[in-house]
Picture 1: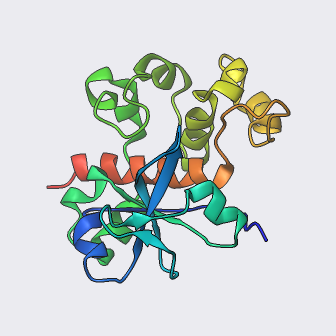
Picture 2: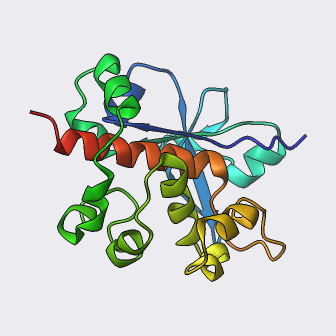
Length: 189
């Protein structure tokens, strides 16, 4: 029974967190060779290779068998966040959107660092507009660049028929919120 389960958790220090929890490190099988999955772990009892200390089942095969992988990703965005209260304040404070018009700021921001011109041309003023931008820099939605916010909003979250890479709305909004956190950190006293 395959489980369609995709959970990514961004954190300041994944290794310190995972040391506290029993888990099995995921694996990737390529050309018959198993290697450690970069981010995926299992909290279910999965057989593992003793010497490599990784799952003995490739992450795709594990999904087909009903196991679910959780990806824990290190994210430097959170390095200056003191605690959950601070994070909530940063995420829920309206940022100075005008900062996105400056290449020297944008080049340091999560996921949009190479798109300063595009960001400046659109001048996003909300998390949703920033999420649209994050979506249209992905291959499946590049054709929407240059379109109006209205035109983008009509099809940006549709799954491409050809299977090309795109952002789901939940991912794009989460990443846009992380950028808001970064912007607000820049403006802290």
